[in-house]
Length: 193
Image (spheres, one colour):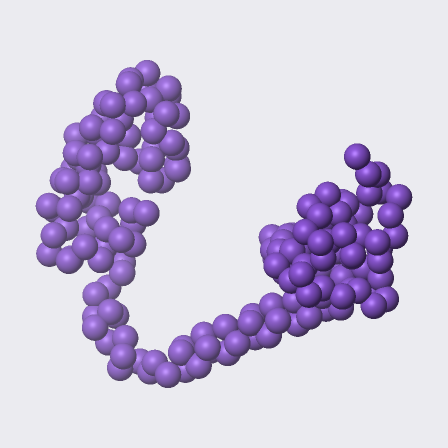
């Protein structure tokens, strides 16, 4: 088996064009951290930097048959990072502009129906409905939606089975839905994720 770690960039490029997966793997191992650091430095976001690296290496593999290396992989990846980052920043700018445009296109009259309902009154009505739940059901509901416990954590905390937790949550949702049906489900979407 050939030792790809000793090959030059041009040799790896030639082998890549011939569908040699070990050559691609060597390129990936050799340049991944540099490409990632360059993307992270420009984007300041680990998730986006990882996506940039993934896109660059995926594109390299897709284009391997017609790939031609002129100045080495350092130069190639430097340009690829710059191109991907510019695309992402342009996409961010377009999204921000769209959001701004959308926000400006709505005036107060567009929100008149939404704001006709007083959020404070809705919150009080919701809290009253929660308070009217049976004690154990209310406790399970609050642990789930106010304290963000998982069903398993609730079961452990209250020393009951997960099925019982599930039953309490189902009962709470149904009672709240019935109690707040006149609010057309909007309220439940605001309070219950």
